[in-house]
Image (tube, rainbow, N blue to C red; front, side, top):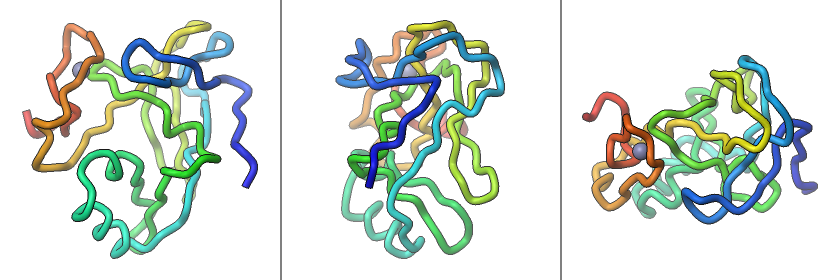
Length: 146
Ligand SMILES: [Zn+2]
């Protein structure tokens, strides 16, 4: 598989966590920045991964529909390097069975691209957030689990 390239963003070293994805140029709000790609697996298989692994694996799972999940933990998916933030500038959306990372704000060149992982896991306390935002929830957890 060829590594997915985006005209808008690229992987660089991040201050938040190891690698991150950064804007190569100004990105207008509403832009589809990069497609989130990976292996297509069944939702049953995704459940097994969720049970077996803690966050590391779960973060990369995107449910496409009632049968299928995308497991983005593959080398050809640079979107997996996008970090979580409690005050993100992008979000993941499902557009006709493709997962896209869409800009929810105007993003400046060289800004790090982030979205809210909304992690649905019981052991979220093991996964503190270091996004540095004033609105930081402290953990990579779901919005409704505050
Ligand atoms: Zn945070």
